[in-house]
Length: 254
Image 1 (cartoon, rainbow, N blue to C red):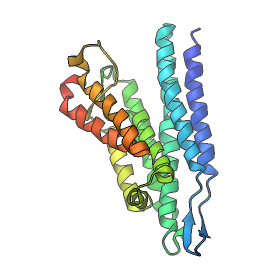
Image 2 (cartoon, rainbow, N blue to C red; image 1 turned 180 degrees about the vertical axis):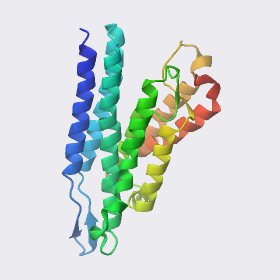
Image 3 (tube, rainbow, N blue to C red; image 1 turned 60 degrees about the vertical axis):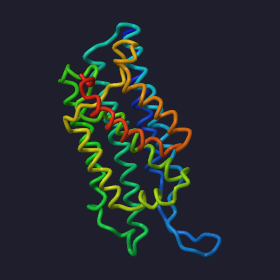
Image 4 (tube, rainbow, N blue to C red; image 1 turned 30 degrees about the vertical axis):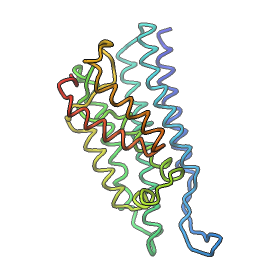
């Protein structure tokens, strides 16, 4: 029974590896549409990586729940969880950003021949994720509040980008995601939020009173409304709202 939570953690790692496989299988090339217009083709298979990162998030939640259910929490489980999270919410999202940078440069003249140095900033994200997780493991004060953005939240934000690009209807947003400078900005912001000490809410309940859970209820209602109205674009919107609400209720993040 004590190893059941660790099996969930390894499943998290497995899904993260599957996400990486789908990211690596995506080739960016040039093609012509029905009107003879030249465009850069970005295979939709990348969206499957987002699916597996989402599955990683589900089992990442479940391993903690199962550990508490079977009273099987352990120091090894904590370390194993962080190692899996680095892959699923650090390396895999970093590779998604790598592909978006390739997409952005591929639309420029001779963009397919760009120096790899322009793509390497994507891997600042997994480095920031590893730093954040290592710091979290030695800090016992983050039970009901976080110092910096949780790595799974950052990973899910980045995982939403292919879904927004392929299934969203907002042309302006797609153009932004195809701009390498916008991707650099996302890399910088997400990485900074992970390694910062900004107080952010942990979505755990101390009790079930409205007073103590008002910020969580606000976020829940916003997420439901956003999903209905904005579909996948709701993910970055709720992410921004999460930061705003956390700062507004920072006395409840500890």
